[in-house]
Image (cartoon, rainbow, N blue to C red; front, side, top):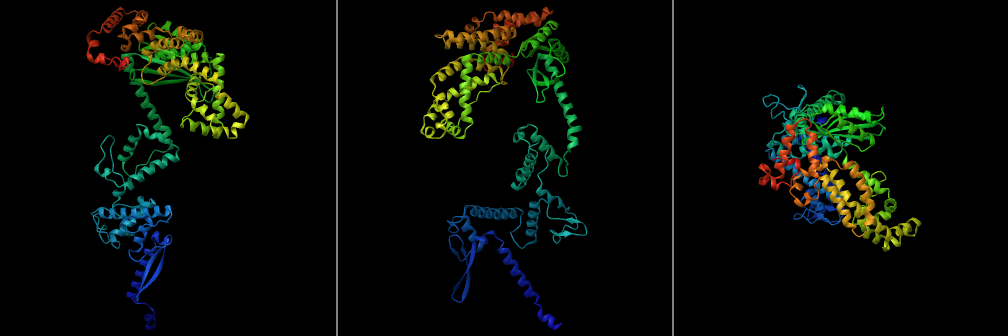
Length: 621
């Protein structure tokens, strides 16, 4: 026993050894040790250890590894920064210093003096460790009244009770909220790590599920987050079968109820039914029906017409069914495509319902006007010429680079084979970059490149420097620009176009004549195309009535004198709308008089000031 005891170290020696080893291991775990070396220095009879930088060679006698770390991080005021350290290593040291600083702040915030050997600090380090590993679910909160939650057992794993207490779990979850309630003070003061952890969880799900980032702009996004937060920890999200089954049906029922709520508005103000025919990727012929009223536009239904021939009779029966489902007394207007079968079906609908108006889609009519203009030989050749220029540039990297350099990073809209108006918008775009394109093909960068010596490159140079092309392009743009402006009005969602189309078309026609007053032969061909579509399709009584009832135009006497027939067309609309109801017809004509003479509320200052500022439907006396 004596020999054994003599060979074993004493308890004091053991504790000193282990303490020395732990101190050395913990000290050299700092990442800064990888970038320095220990250099012993003799000062008299004592031996001191210095830390020498591996990059600049500077030695440090005091301050330890922390001072050397500041040297690498470039912290000013404490020590001279290292001028040869790599940027990524400097960034790593800065991050490490900031992390230690944040750690000290969190410890101070808990109301404890910083002591790296205290049990409470060890507990805090373990909490951070488990939180980084994502093991918060294993941490359970022990009530303060529990006998096991004493200072001696804090931070220990209690095997008998199968419990693991590492602090208060509420510190690591966002506070519960309810939809529509202001955020709590606790949520506002929550540490950045907890907020970032929640944000990362949301974004990881979006990235994994390929959810577009603009989905967060949905008005239901924050409502979803608030609802989840109000449930608190332990909420399980719905699974695949619940989402595609019961919950989907529930949402469909809610949408149906929402659409039904529009019926009260339809009955009060009337509505417009819009039919939009299209073909999907499976080559199915579908017809979508939408209903518009001042409250908004709602999707009513979609009909698959692939199995039947879209004759006028078939479309008439389908339209009649939709009108009856909405309520024929609520429908004022029906809008369809301009195809012959749709036109015939619309005429039949007007015969069956005397108070209903049918008209073709204005945007489709204007697109057909553009299509007819695009069939002219001069226009067709000019569009092909412009398409050849843009096609070559966008199919070759270096010419595309030069084009963007000379245009200041702007793009040239390319003509499309299926969009009629897009071709003329593309001509406007390429004409706007005329000088930049000419400067590009005459620049030294282009002329000395291999592309300029190629046959296709030479053709590009000739096409861009062709004066006849630019003259013809300018002529076409001047003639079609007023029509493009009208197309933007009718194809916009900013305001209803019914009260503006009549004036916009007449204004566009007058502007085309004014621009080519000395070249009437050029403009006559375009005017014949416009007049043929306008007189046969777009020139409806409803559009003239919308023009007369628009306060923006009504009180301009000079403008109204140019369109004396608009009042007679309005009277035709009133007569048809009040079919078989002389009392209603009398009330409407009386309202016409009050509106025209600015009597009653139409003459108040607010109504006068809002004539041009608000759309006609918004100006309510």
